[in-house]
Length: 255
Length: 72
Image (cartoon, rainbow over all chains, first blue to last red; front, side, top):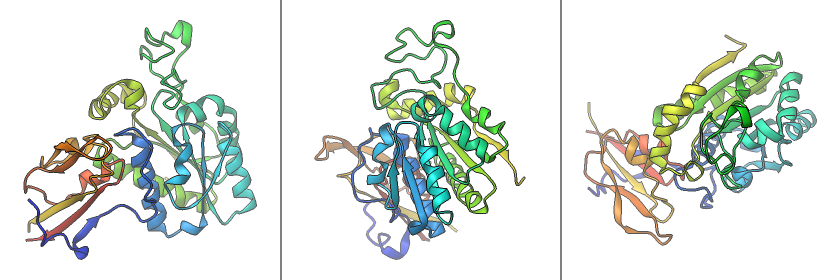
């Protein structure tokens, strides 16, 4: 089992990206945030833009994203990351600016900011983590929570008469003229993670072309909030989340 | 052409989420019987079926897996 002949530096085919710091992530075991952080770090490393990238971290579990990826960061007020990204990109147009937001941040309190940033066609990248729940504050219902899904504020399941319907914000944003690339991906399998990485890379490349905003939704799990094990949460996501939030490209102006 | 691979796991950082085990096409990862200093059962190599495909490392949320591969 322990094959010491193979364990040589020249045989490495995959290792932790150098851009990820050695801090132990505070996320729960199996959380999609860690995987997405890694993909972003890989893309920035491969494009060689570490010193030209500014990330805007949100409020939510990923508020500490600046502890994990070794680039320049700013921390925005709740939901206001697209506004801060707009300012950063306009003041430093040569920088690659991206926001990293959850569904409670982007689809709820920050709806106005994201819609107007998309409408203005700011040349930024938005990474949107959609796990259908408020993870950090204890699993409350989010706008993206599925119908019938149990959360701490909808203990009998989300009822459309009382709680409204799930918000498909990605499709909404695709209707706006200022957006260049809109896609929905996931990271629960290796193949899906590679596709998501390609989408993130495409987003960064489009932002350099100044053709509008790139929006990458990652359908994710919150196994603690969903009260499932990480592997069960991935299966639950495949069965239920993908029915409402199908993965794939929604809009690409260069195609 | 065939490949032979192996993985190295940072057992102190592994949180035992088992997503790598589910994604391993060769079914050669398992959770350990012992726990690390944080109390998590960590992932470990279960047999020598690894081909170095890096599926486990790609989905690892905590980036604790390094993958090695050689042609045989």
